[in-house]
View 1: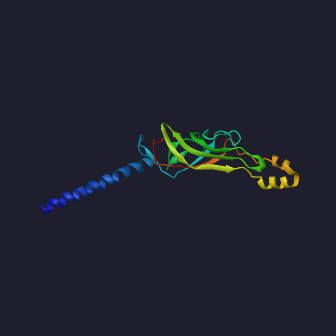
View 2 (view 1 turned 30 degrees about the vertical axis):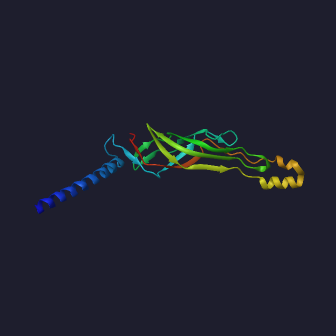
View 3 (view 1 turned 60 degrees about the vertical axis):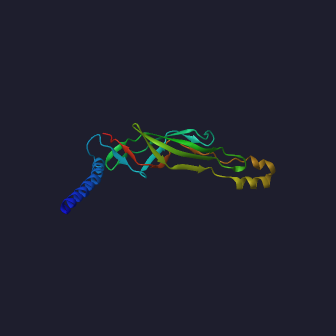
Length: 180
């Protein structure tokens, strides 16, 4: 009876090992270009190179406005292509302030939302925040030298040109079907 319990115990351990190895094997086979239809996992933290698909300006943007991006380079898991350059991504303006009087520079902040890969939305993280050149010191000096006329000095607006690069990262693991 003792010997039978040992054999049963060993069988359970071996079965447990086989079950824990199988998913890893399937995943690594998919990442290395396994059978068609197998999904691969795009890992959290993976670099995603985007570029702005439109010009965005602190003068015209408003909080909540959508911002369009495109994938700048093919996205791969190992050697497996999961998204082609030009794939669309979306972000949102989270802060937009026009340049002001007394040399105050404009502000523009954009939060990334997701990359649309087929029917899957791959969540992205990373922000692009920038402040315009502040001319406050200059405006104060002009006020002292020239009186109230010095307050007319404006800071710079933020303008992000179409095609400007933006580094992003995958925010959460995503299971994707490889492209052929």
